[in-house]
Length: 265
Image 1 (cartoon, rainbow, N blue to C red):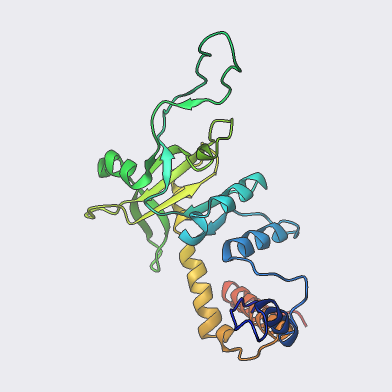
Image 2 (image 1 turned 120 degrees about the vertical axis):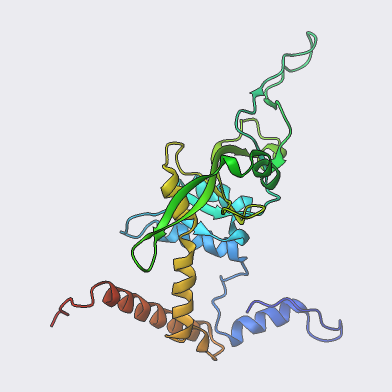
């Protein structure tokens, strides 16, 4: 609700409109506009202080393509498995990084390592490996209890975005996950993950495909509990509505998991 608009110079300014919007919506003065990735990582960092077990952060391409978000999560020691686009640039596994020798006897010696090859788009890298490099992995149980499987390619890569900023260190290794179902001409999805190098393929695949649960929860929040039914215009009213809907969803989730559990008196 923090709108930036342009109005004629002889009338209100955009800053006046913004201030009025804050006042009308009862938005706290310290609240400023943030993008969805910024809001998302703020929530993750806030949840880190809660007394709950930490789990890897999952997100769609809008979050995975945001390199600042990935760096912020990694610096906060939070594991992630984030969807990315096929155009994301990486260095393939085995790319050498060496500091060149100084040419001559004057001047500062080089400190920044140089890559032995150029970065490439992950879509091109996976296409070069081909479907023969894929392995069949179970990523979740189906409705009948039978495991659901698909073909995935798992390779270690180094993201190229920090390299272009001229930073002195060699880019860190990460997992590149690509789902390439049998019979398809190309992969259907790509993910980047900072999980440890010894992470098992089935866990990587399960986490990559776990976002279906998030979509299901969101559908239930809207369709069954009215998350999108709020028609008010105040900051507090919206937060009250979403808090009650979220609490109701949490209660129903626990009831589904333990349908025969006795409720406390």
